[in-house]
Length: 308
Image (cartoon, rainbow, N blue to C red):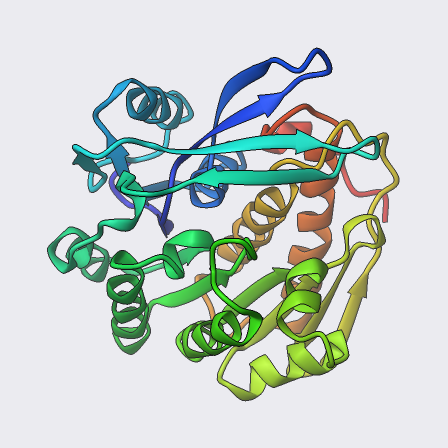
């Protein structure tokens, strides 16, 4: 896989998912890893820059990425342990996370480990804890700025974890710095409500566009998504499905969105029809993921064909 269309930077996390009997089962996870796997399953060549622990959990994460065809050429073999997340789900399938991040591999980035990104074109995606947790977060932010200056299309999903990113004011300040480097920003309705409790969601999306983003999107769970573009607001309902859980649904949405945008060029000058098609497909990919246990995004042939 020598010509990846998308490069993803960020963490690979072991999700310890609690079952009905209270037992924990280990699954590969972490938003950036999930997005990379989702993209490959949708037919998009993708490389992942992650710091993968050389300990057993890290090897399991590496094996999962390789088994799904993710290019790990520039992934770092890290001596630190892997990050863990204990995941519980409510009766309606919503997931809650408790992270173990102290001293783990994912946040120890050095500039030299990220330099390879700038040798490529296409789309660069990042987000989640990697862009908030130091010391690595600052180096990733510098990389995003340099990538945009060099003509790459930059995508960002903050994927907020309130317990780990400081106060809402601190996280909002950090996010808005990053939004200024990104062409595409996608966040969940929950993320936006926590970051901007006094503001209307649509106004937040428009504000991100004012900071330099071309496409700002909020996912609304079973209500679909809303996107702010140069033409105004685009609303996309979600398909009705029987939800098993929502683990990885937001990452599947991101993979679906970027995969369709890639099919229409690496951007960021997409036409309105291109954006509408991409947002619709993203909701369909996320819906399929919600019918499966854990972060298990579909292959392209498993996404129901459009009927209109």
